[in-house]
Length: 82
Picture (tube, rainbow, N blue to C red):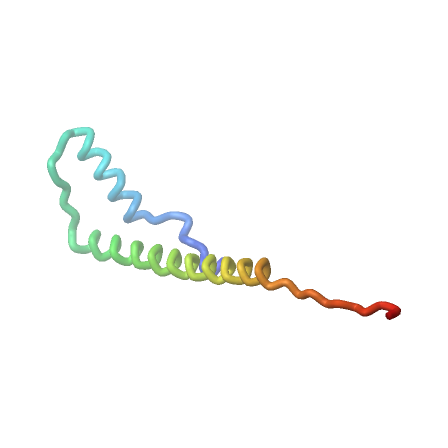
């Protein structure tokens, strides 16, 4: 699962969150980011979205397997010594 794990840090996302927090504290009405910051942010969000989508698919597959294994019951009759 190491290939599918989320990155441990997302510097552009973290920087944006810090900027939003600072803007809220100073009661700014808006914030601006450069086009390079927007590209970096888009890249990080694409990675997160892709990996989370894959994880959701894996969860759905596991749930389907669980559902199938709990609903399918094999019953075998043995006539014994009749």
